[in-house]
Length: 251
Image 1: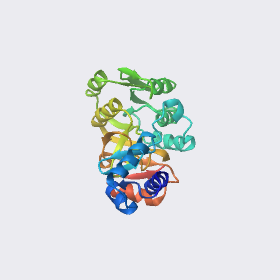
Image 2: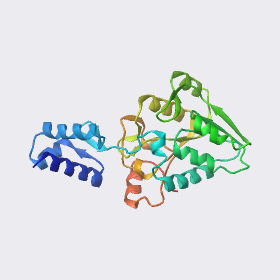
Image 3: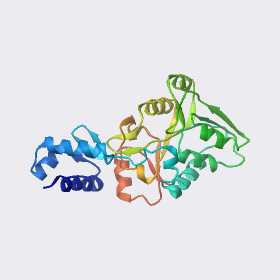
Image 4: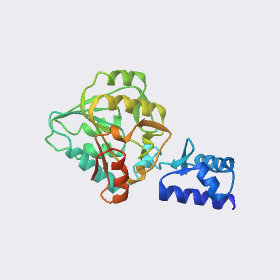
């Protein structure tokens, strides 16, 4: 079997099954595990999968910068944002992560809502400023331009003093085995710190993030209070996530 054929089959298997195991592929393709590992390494270098111990998972396509992500799953993010905004109750303290879906949450807040928004995203803070009854707390740190969020030790220290009702966590990967993940180590550390300070953590996940993984783990799925997915997400996928211990809701 030619290398290009083998790689195409690996990607097809990833798409249909959500993961591949190197030793199983080696046996099926009648080749060595070293050859399969080389294929996986080359596919990972081209951004087509995420390597894990013993095999690979689908790579998230949501790892582009903020400007690129603004053009992805636009309608889904609007519906996810509307659903997330409806979960916020008067008087709550709500942590909003950076990202395009969080901006949609802010845009769909009730006009008369009185609540406190805590964010480490300058973009989200500016968007929230249009809501005159919403108090805004911005957590400072080093600006990570790729995602337009603040990161760093000072931010994590400030987060340790919070007690929030809700945290809308942004991720680039949601996978039943790999859990919640993102593409940057510092972002992952900030997300873990914010998650620990909220009574409930919710992920609003557009389609390109589902059944995908990125390099840096944040938390397992069963640590979430709820996973909200697009309305057209297949029922089979919902069952897979529920089996991993998370409550799932369609937007």
